[in-house]
Length: 373
Image (cartoon, rainbow, N blue to C red; front, side, top):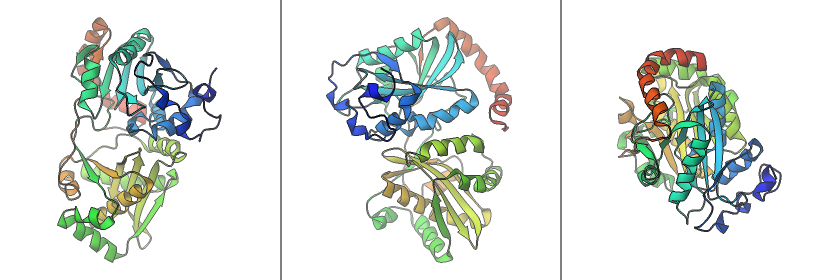
């Protein structure tokens, strides 16, 4: 049987994930991985929302990659009516020459179980059978990467550094919030509290929406900010619009803005998984840069009310680190990428092309996104 009924769930997209039979799993659950059909993906967005899965694993997060000719594939492990694990794979290439990128996965669905060596080996067997040259994994838990490395031909290198789980190894600045707004505010640096207080006194208007229309109106602000700060917008507006539309159905996205006297002066785009809000984009008018702290403050507290208790300000290269340290005293580091080689000869050939790929990357970005470095 195909479709959601195979999962023991009703035929509508908003079926509560508690109906999903993960609690019936045993430690001896089968290690086979099977590919999920497209009609099941809405259910999986709901299922993952009740786990500790990273946002990088949600189907709505990965589907926009189709715009740049990257094919997301989704697998589950175990009995088809009560799976043990899930993973999203971004696939590049075709036939026997495919590359698989797994960002912050695989995901175990039952917190009382750990993915077995047989399950992890089964994932590699599936990849071999489907023509993959290698799989590149990232994960926030170094132990998970070590378990994967133990069952394959592992190399602790990033064999595909041009499509990134951003950031892969950069440190993130994550604010751990509390129920009390006062307690959260008290954990900030004095400078951040001063900026927030002055922003409140200045009379800025804060707005929130889950519609992509607002981001379109603010896009000039983001472009101007990227040019001024000398950083690159990694994706075009159309990509973020697709991403917002996919997340909107599951109440996983907000676009926040600050305005003063009718003029837009600040914009943040924030997505959330079950535990963390991720600020993906932020931009501010240079004449109102002091309002940045106020906008992040409103954004993180709104996300807290929606259920994301941690607020990820993102990495802090250059001068951004000083600003972000005003909200949290330490940063959060991640282990480096792990590559599992499945076809050694093909992999050696791929390694020889990497220096060439580095030089042609600006051209590839222009073809894929319609933008340049």
